[in-house]
Image 1 (cartoon, rainbow, N blue to C red):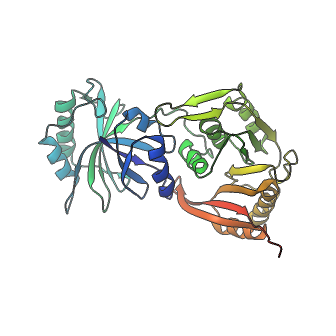
Image 2: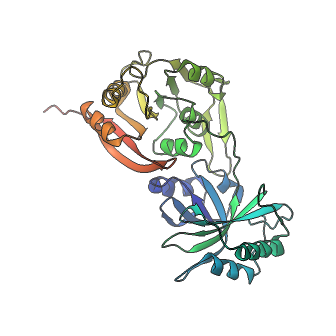
Image 3: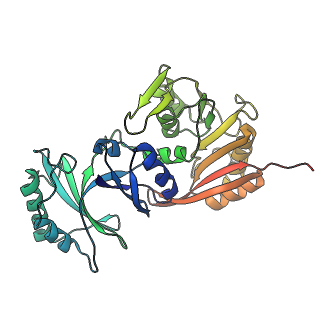
Length: 357
């Protein structure tokens, strides 16, 4: 089995621990910590590269341990070995590359002699040529405290369109959805859809009966109506062979332009799941974040079935927790994460059931 590293948003360790083996049949987690998963997998490397909830994945060429580990020691070790050659690590012949050095998730500059030694080892083993600006392949030396050092090749995913300012990244939208359970009868709602990252993720990777997509911005809603959210109907099978998802493409999608605190087109107790990313700084006519969150959560509570769940991402956890208590929603879990370097929290909320004796 080849060994892999996958980097994800720290705070979702339990989610990723569950979903890597589900998506990659036969994968064995070796360790998972601080936004990094190290695992074995016998399948095709492109299946690892396609995992939608992962930021970057790497195939491991070699690993190093011992006290005082440095990039110089790792590069020296790589230069003295015959490196494994197969398609996953670069043995398919041809193409350009560059070498990067990552310490504690931050790129680090190394002496030119160290860089050139690493480059020569890769050229000798993989018949590639250097291009430090626009390479086809990247090889990374990775050091993180308390873990082995790794010499790896980046498995490039399709970059796709660069997220716009304020747009949720695909990986985070996917992780928010993976913390929920979907089936063919699920009714789900995103009251603050924005650019549509969450609904698009649901449509692509999950089963559902009905998907309510809403935003108060008319331009955003017009954009959503021109996306795949409003395209066709039927069944789509994605990522076959690396965990198969059957999902509805366009079927049962309802896009609306409304204030999220007054979703009158959705019935009381109609929704199983609310998954959303409320505004972090602009609160319309409400001004005060506390009142805004309270009104939004009160409406979410109205939408939810007694067994329903709401998953919300916020940069204001104290205000969200206070609003949930005021709206009589119970915090069943919370994850502290970073979004673009800013502290954030993912809340999972459920209705408080009042028992009558």
